[in-house]
Image (cartoon, rainbow, N blue to C red; front, side, top):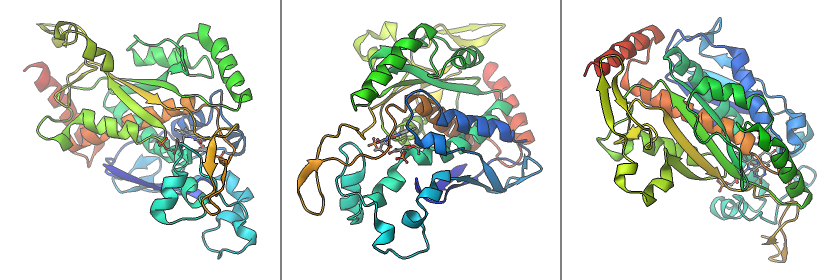
Length: 388
Ligand SMILES: Cc1cc2nc3c(=O)[nH]c(=O)nc-3n(C[C@H](O)[C@H](O)[C@H](O)COP(=O)(O)O)c2cc1C
Ligand SMILES: C=C(O[C@@H]1CC(C(=O)O)=C[C@@H](OP(=O)(O)O)[C@H]1O)C(=O)O
C-alpha cells in the first residue's frame, strides 16, 4: 500500500490518493470525519480551527461505501482559502496586489529559511504553505481508512497525550485500547489522568499569555498484532525503522521510543528482555513488554508501545531574533497565526501514521486484493504461529 498527498495550507484543498487497500472494505465515513474533527480539536489550538470544518470527500476507489481495490481519491476543502483566494490561487499570475502577504523574516525552528535557500524562494510563504502541518489532515484521513482495515483484522490502536510541557498526564502503563479510548474521551487534552486537566489548561493559558509555546509526549498502543509483521532480513524491511520514520515524518516530532525506550539503555539486560513463556491455553507469550512488542524489526505478539516527543511550536507571538532575507536587517521573526501547543491534534496524527505503517506491513505480507482473502490468510497465519 502506498499513498501521496498534495495541497498547501491556504490553497483550495488537500488531496490524497491511496493505492493498495483491498477490495471489500466497508468504509465508515462518519468514523473518518470523527478522526478529522478530533485532529482539529484540543485545548491550545489557534483560531484557524474555528474557520475549518474538515470533512472527507471520496472521489474514487469506493462504490456504495465499499472499496473496489482501485486507488482511493480523497479531498479535504480548506475553508480558509476563501480569505486567501487572490494570494493562493494556482491559476492567476503574480501581481503586486496578490502577493501582498509575503514572508521575509524566517521563523527560527520552522522550515522558512532553509526552504527558501533550497528552493530559491524569496517569498517564504512559498515554503510555509507546504511545510505547515495543515497537510496532516490528509494523513489522518488516510490513517482512518487504514485503522478501519486493521479493525477488520482484529488489530486496534490508539494515540494519546502522555505529557504536555513538563507536566505528566498519566497513561504510562495501560495497554487495553478500548479502556484508554474511554478515558481520553472525557477531556479536551486526550489525557488519561483527569486530575491534571486544570493544571495543564492553566499551563497552556499562561504560556499563550507569555507569547510562548509548548511541546509534549504522545503514546501509541496497538494490540492484536500477530508475531512476525516486519522482518529482520535487511534494514529496509524492519518495522521499527519504518515506524520511526513515519513518526519523525510528522511535523515537529523529534524523538521516538519503543517500549521502555531510552530508559532501557541505563538498565542491565535482565531487566529489559522479555522472558518467553508457553502454555496449552495461551501458547506463546512474554512475561513482560519492556521492548514494546518489537524484536528484530518484527512484532513479537505483545502490545506495540511507541512514545514520541514533539518540540514546542516554532511560531512565537513574542518572536526571537531573525534576519530579513531581502534587506539582511536584523529584526524579529515573522508572526503567523498559530497554535500554542498542538500536542493534542498531534496524538491523532501519530496514531494515524502508525496505522498507515501497520496496514502497509500487513498488506506486504499477505494478499492485498480482497479483504476476505486477507482475513482468511491472517487467520491461518495466526494459527500457524500459535502452534509453532
Ligand atoms: C498538528 C500540528 C499543528 C502545528 N501547528 C503549528 C502552528 O500553528 N505553528 C507553527 O509554527 N508550527 C506548527 N506545527 C509545527 C510545524 O509544522 C513544524 O515545526 C514545522 O513544519 C517545521 O518542521 P520540524 O519542526 O519537523 O523541523 C504544528 C505541527 C503539528 C503536528
Ligand atoms: C491549519 C492547521 O494547522 C496550522 C499548522 C501551522 C504550521 O505552521 O504547521 C500553522 C498554523 O496555520 P495558520 O497560520 O493558517 O493558522 C496552524 O493553524 C491545521 O492543523 O489544520
